[in-house]
Image (cartoon, rainbow, N blue to C red):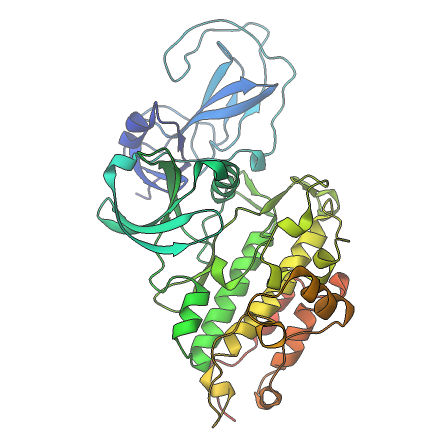
Length: 439
């Protein structure tokens, strides 16, 4: 019998009991004892927010395929349902006569909540708390803007642990919320295992370890073949397409997300030469259950846009400070500009693209033109005013394909955001690249 899959969320006070119901992988629990999902929700500011989500502890009748309830006690209500991930959100149909129920802690009371209706599941971020006493730190593998990444062990597996200084708690909270959005399990997104707090007090994200580290580190040490270049490119753009996608599945909604800090330091490389996006401390969720025209950015328009992102990957409109931060499309197209720079960065380390020439050392975008640490002013003049871009070798025009590499890059980093490819269109073009290289 196929195991029932339920959305999983448990706070530190009830995680031990919740884990008895089945194995947990990120925000998904696989039921060991039942075909029923359960959800306990607390009424907060007129909306029911999840307090405990997962599999039912034992065999319980659950004929309904959706999560619905009509009574609440002490601002808590619960549901039982019999389809995959059905406990993600709840439909409320209040009864005239309220009956008693139990919250997850077994407390009884009486109250009512009339008029509330189901809310969008994209507002529910399911998160797993991890007991850090079960994790052993082994060695530092990277140092980022907001935290230090350690290699460690957890439940017999090698993992990556991103420790945030207490002063960067806001970035930790933002990044954890992104990883914990519904339907965020994808090969092109770093695999989130949970979060916790170190003994010293720092908040920690626990992720699947990528054996090759960051794309920056990988390219600095590795000359790649054309096959590897295609694999890296396809997995990178597929991850971005998924991040940007507005998805509905099994009653859950993943809203579009703009990364806003795409760089070779924020892309991981696995042993099979596939990429995964990571580091969502600058990301913006475009919250809406409607059409793209209704997308609303979860971001303050008063925030200085130049403070978000890595300088040499910033699009012209960010450098000019003319971007409309309330426009979801503008933020997504800023990611596509950075995608073009990342593709150039990877392809410049491909031996097959340089024929009998020596493959250049790894360089960041604009390093050859402006040096290793260009200032905002230098980038503004070169990228925005002069409309300069990284140099594309003339030999790339000989690559056999439907779209030339130069066309893909130029259509990703076009000066006009509206003229750029979408991530989906870029994925279609890269999918047309031949796997085998031949002149």
